[in-house]
Image: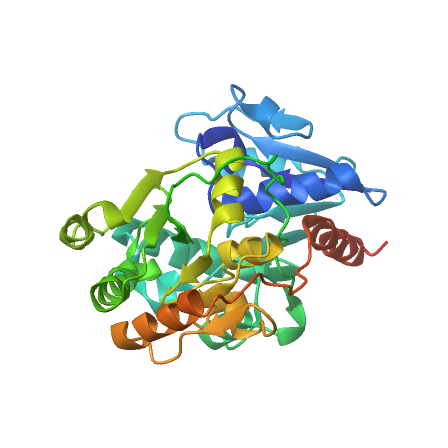
Length: 351
């Protein structure tokens, strides 16, 4: 069976985050177990398409002609593609083949103030149209499913499929010293308002002011947007906060392996990939109950419920001073995620 996938994000972005990591994870799962499917990517960018890992059909952009709604559908004939997957919130509104769309979160509806204005306007328009035209909508967590059904009450729940993301994207690094001489807490994610890093910094400040723990706080991730208020908080903590920026997979894996605790105080996550990746490396997690953390329970998982700096500092101290040990909770990998997608493609295609 032939499945087409929009891979523009992979062939355009130099730094793969969020949606790009989701697409890359599916490709890796497919490479290990094709499940009788021939997966082909579609992109407008030829220069870096070799990075994608599957054959890519390049459809050059043409001035004045919309790529997704006009140029792409011309290539999606039933003889060439049985199903088309839009993994980044959108699918062509008009096409001669059944379509599947992935909606990763509804931050643009629930918390529009945390998203750039032009992105909010684009997603409100495009996601609604894509959901209406898709045969099935994939979401990564029950929370996003609930959000989507609330936003679009006429959408049948039977058309929404929850498929969690995989945790084994990063390679297990060879034995190597820790990136830091001191023990540290780790957070991975773009520095943007939804991540609630102000609360994390306030809680960490209380921790180091009220205890003698030597830990640093490592914030890995791109600079993001709407975060000018963080500079003063970070500056006030001096060398206790480490900002590596965006790092490659090998370096990120090393940060995970040596972390004492993974912390996420996000106001809202569609899934929360960093939390399951931390658990896969055996790192205990302290996180707010959103996305996958609304559903995960077990050894190594602690929830931040009240969402205050005092509560966070107390939980950090309990976890770090008490020596919480390593996490032992099993989490699924990208092969399982891909196989769930493959079953859905067959279902949608009627084969």
